[in-house]
Structure formats: structure tokens, C-alpha cells
Amino acid sequence: MTKLFTPIEFNNVQLKNRIVMSPMCMYSCMERDGSVTPFHETHYISRAVGQAGLIMTEATAVMPEGRISHEDLGIWSDEHTEGLKHLNEQIHRYGAKTGIQLAHAGRKARLNSDIYAPSAIAFNESSATPTAMTLKDIENTIESFKDGARRAKEAGFDIIEIHAAHGYLINQFLSPLTNKRGDVYGGSAENRYRFLSQVIEAVQTVWNGPLFVRISTNEYDTNGSTLEDILYFVRQMKDQGADLIDCSSGGVVPASISPYPGYQLKRCETIKEQEAIATGAVGLITTGLQAEEILQNDRADLVFIGRALLRNPYWPKAAADELGYTVDAPKQYERGWR
Ligand code: FNR
Figure 1 (tube, rainbow, N blue to C red):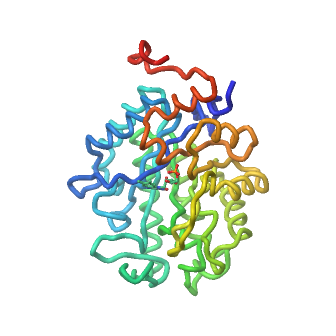
Figure 2 (cartoon, helix red, strand yellow):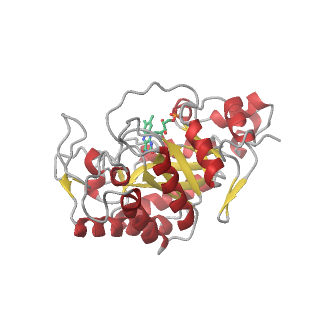
Figure 3 (cartoon, rainbow, N blue to C red):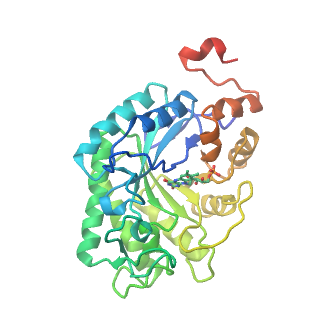
């Protein structure tokens, strides 16, 4: 038995294998209203037919001003619930579980309207300067994550992932590069963690299912969060009951990185080993053998597959073939599967 195709359970939700469709923005909401479109259905459902164990939606905005673009998926209104519910029902038919990535872009929103961040510092010369959030703004935003989580539950998602990576709002609070606040939300690692801590707490008042958090484990800047800071954040998340840390990197400040196969794995492995919490590996994982190696060596518990799954919705089948394993076919395809 391969480890890639061994089921795994998080807080009573069982995934049939360790393959996760990594969250990927599709910028495909046609009416600028954040609603699921036929494209989203085709896109996500085909990866479920392709036998990924967990389908994680793209970054889904908890507030309209938290979108990266006007075409982002949203969950800021009760009107979004129905479309997401239908999407979930379809994905579930093919045996995959569903996750939603709850997000707020903060200063990385490109909306030609007011944008918000912990401090009034623009991402780069071509981006707008955000308004520094007041305590009231912070409170409202935390409430929006909670409302998003409630709607996610109503829509039938199995897992919630909080997007605290890639330099979006929560990451902007975590990083000393973007958080220059003088109040209880800025300064020490403990203060910078406070916003995420309160988001998790708020989400947990309406959600008792599995909770994943995606973080940037490396900010590629000597003045950014240190590995010690990151491990501290992970310990706090573990204490708060997070089930898995999805270990990505970058995006906080402009930085040039040269990705190579498994480029984000080292810190993923360190987090799993030092803090004894489940981790998700992501970043240029493209073959079944590579995924199996990561899991067998206990470097991570799940593999998140991004671009390889964009290129091939049947990536799980290709990975199984490589490993000499026979993955079940969707019943409609049984005659052509082998
Ligand atoms: C992404 N990525 C991403 N990450 C995230 O946390 N939320 C998101 O909405 C998106 N959006 C997105 C769109 C597109 C088109 C791509 C290619 C990527 C990052 C993605 O989940 C993944 O971490 C990286 O692509 C690295 O993994 P791969 O692609 O090398 O397997």
C-alpha cells in the first residue's frame, strides 16, 4: 500500500487519500459578485472526478474589500451560500472532501477603492497605499471571518483553511515587515499573532470541524519573521486546536525566489518535527514518486498539488500508475480506466 493513497482523518473527517488540490484563484466571477460560476463547477468537479482526496477552493473573500480582484470568489454574503452548497454536493458525489480557503487580501487588494492593512505601507511602487486599520476595522474583519465560517458550514464544506500566507491580510499582521503598529496588534511576535489568534477563536465559535491554516514559513527577507517566530506562531495555532499547518512561503514583500522541486519542504519538515503537528507540503511537487517520498519520510501528512493538477485533472491516476497502485475509477469511467 502506498502512503499517498492511504486514507487519513482530521477531526472526524476522513480523506480517501493524501492528495489535496491546492487553493488556486481562478478570477472567474463574471458579475463581480463573488458567486460560483459554471467555470468553478467544471474546474473543481473535474478534479474530484480525477480522484483528488480533498478539493480546496481558491482564496474566498470574507469581505468585498478583501478581494484580490473583482473576479474573486466570495463568502461575505448569505447570497453566496447556495452556489457553494451546490458545488459541494457535486464534488462529494465523486468521493472527494471539500475545503474552503477563507481569505482577506489586505494591502494586496487591487480594487480601485479603499484598501486596508495593519499599517499604511504599500506593497510596491505600483500598488496603492492602504489605510491603517482602526480597532473597529479589526473587530469587523474578525467578525467577517466568523460569518464566512458560518456560511462555509451551511454550504457543507468539510474543512476550513484560513489563509494566513502569501502576504495577505493575516500575514501582514504576522510579519514585522508590514506590521508597524504601536498597539496590542504590533511589535512582539505575541502581539503580531493576536489578530490570527482572534480570527481562529471567532471561527471556532461557529465551526468545530477540521481547521487548517496556510502560512508563509519563509518571508525571504532578513528583517521578516524568523524561524523562531514561525515556530512560535505554529505552537499557538496548535494550542488553539488547528489540525494542520499548510506550509507555503513568500509574498509578504517583493522578493525574487528560484523555486526547485520541493523548495518549501525544509521548513514544513521542521515544523512537523519540532512542533508535532500535521503539515501539508506544497510547491513544485509534480510526481507520484516525489509525493510518496515526502509522506514516507514523515516530512508532511498531505501533499498539496497546484499547477500539476491544473495541467492534468487526472494527476492522482498518473501518480498511482507511477507507484504501481490501482486507484478506483469513478464508476462512469471504469471501462476505460486501466
Ligand atoms: C496559486 N496559489 C494560491 N495559494 C493560495 O493559498 N491561495 C490561492 O488562492 C492561490 N491562488 C493561486 C492561483 C494560481 C493560478 C496558482 C498557480 C497558484 C499558490 C498555490 O496554491 C501553490 O501553493 C503554488 O502554486 C505552489 O504549488 P505548485 O503549483 O508548484 O504545485
